[in-house]
Amino acid sequence: MALTRMHHVGMVTPDLESARHVLCQGFGLSVDGSRTPGPNGYKNSQDKTQVLEFPIGEMYYEVSTPTDSDCRAANFLNATNARGGIEYISIASTDISNDVQHLINQGIGLQGNWNGQGPVFLDSNTTHGITLQIIPDDNYYVHPYYRGNGTLTGMAHLGIGARSAEEMRNFWGTIFGLEEDTSMERGLKRPGDAPPRPADDPVHLIEFPLGGSVIEISVPTTPDSGTAKLVASKGTLGAVYHHTCPFAPDVHRLTEQAAAAGLLQIGTIPPKNEAEGNVVAWFHPKSCLGMLVEIWNRTPGEGHYQ
Image 1 (tube, rainbow, N blue to C red):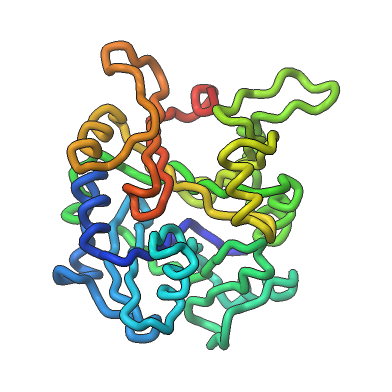
Image 2: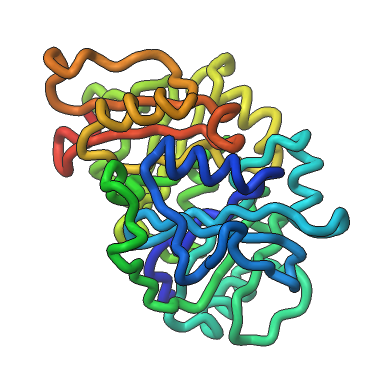
C-alpha cells in the first residue's frame, strides 16, 4: 500500500459561519483562502455542498454544508439531528489505482462508480461502519499565511471507538497495511502480563501511525463508559468516529482562547503554575460543530502515554 498520510477530516455543519468561529476564534486556525476563497469558500457542484478548509499541520479540516436537500451531506445532517460532526476521513495515496484495487481484493466495496484515478469513497458496510475516502496525494503544504495564530500546530491523532481490537488490527493492519505502534498499546492486562500501561479512560488503546498523525483506537473495557455507550449505539458495524486531537504546545493558551470564543470545556486542567508535564483538555461536541475535541501537549516517548 502507498498510503502516505491523513489528507483531511471531512465534517458537515448546518452553518459555515459557526465553523469559522469555532475553528478560527476558538482554536486559532485559519481558512485556506487560496483553496477556499471568499467568505463562503467554494461550491462543490458534484457533492452539492459549500466548503471551507482549515489547515492544521500537514492536513486540514474540510467543513461542508449542503446546498441541496438530497445529497450526502444533507443525509448526514439528518442522521445527526442537524448537529453535524465528523462524516469521514480522507487518506492520501501515491498509487491510488493499485491501492484501491488491493482494498477491493480484500473485500472492501466502493460507493458509486469510480474512474480508476480520482478520489473514491469506500462502502461503509465493508469498513466497519466508518466512512473513508482514498484520494490521490496532492503534496498539500499550506502557505504560512494560512496557518493561523500558532495555537495548534498539527493533528496528534484521530480517535475511533471500536468493539474489537482484533477487528481493528485486521482492518488497519492487514487490509490497509498500516503498522501498529505496539509500544503505545495500553489499558489492557492479559493473564501473565506485567501491569498494563495506564489509559485515562476504561478503554484498551491501540495506535496506527499514518504520516505525521496517528489513528487511535479505543475499545471499551467496561459497558458503562461514554465510549462504550457510543460504540453500542453508533458503532453497530464495529467502529465509530470518536474525536480529533490537535496538538497545542501551550494548552493553557488554547483553553483561554477557546473559552473567550464560548467553547465548552469538559472538566478542567491544572493551573499553569501547577501544571507539570503533559496537559490534556477536552471540549464538548455541542460547542465544536458536533465533534468531540481533545487537546494535548504530550511529548514523544514514555511521556506520550503516561
